[in-house]
Image (cartoon, rainbow, N blue to C red; front, side):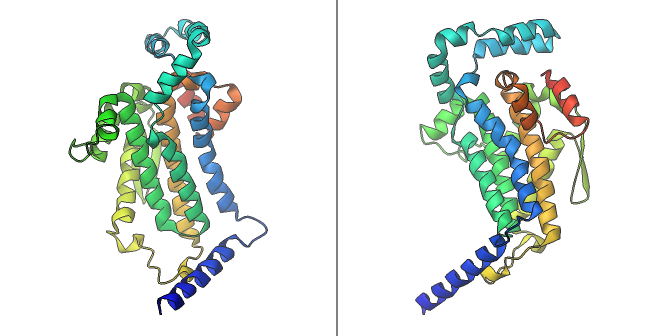
Amino acid sequence: MINAMYDKYLRELRISVARSLRSSVPNPQNVECFEIFTPLWTLIYGLQNEENTPNPTKQLLMSHLRESGDLSGFLSVCRDRSIENSYGPQLRAAHSAMTFNSYFDELVSDSLQFINAFHFYNYRSCMISVRCILENLYRHLYYLDNREYFIRVHELGESEHDLKLTPALFRTYLEGASYLKSVNSLKWSYVISGKNFTGLQKLNQGLYSKTSSYVHGSLPSTLNRLESNLDLVYDPSKADEVIKMAEMLIEMCVAFLCCAHLGQFSGFNETEKRLVLAPFKGTKRPNFRNAIRV
């Protein structure tokens, strides 16, 4: 009985997968979905490039010069590579231990899950992946600034629950993070399910709120209602909705990560910067670059 049911499951799964991938010409939305995440990957892999390993003292000085409006001093310090050239291996080892925790790498994994789910028409899983990306972004940024809690959770075995480390706390932290002050002044407008949100911090709240019902199944409209794998079919309206969510998500992720790792991002070449800043359309790109002075 169980073997027969499993055989039926596998048969339907093969049919569903073959149906979604059989076209010799890729669905334009599938290609668009892949392209949306390439700026995030370019940024992450660029930050992991050993040539972009930061010097914390240099970053502190650059931050001071940027905030005081000393652009020539900022550029001069940015170009100075004397410490990096003398102590490169030591800087890379220390930076890797301090910065690139599992949550940072998981952003790539989550984005691949989103793309795979999109190709297989599993739109609820796409939204759940959005939520995973949000929470892993929160943790990367929070632990980057609060190393002691990362040690307590990942090395001493304490739980985030016991330490009262929640997504709400992480979002509150981001609202007050000093490195995000420059982009908090950008009053860009976003629309999620007919609701308007102004600014990246409000967008963050909107994205988190929107994905909650997909994670918890609290609204009938967010459920997949699958009875078999054959029920996974292309839905143009749902596909369009998750594509728009992904576009807003990546715009916010790129903005927050560029600000958090500004010293490194400043060292990217112009080709890399253009690829990373691709989510910012029209006047958003020069406005963002002006805000972070890059």
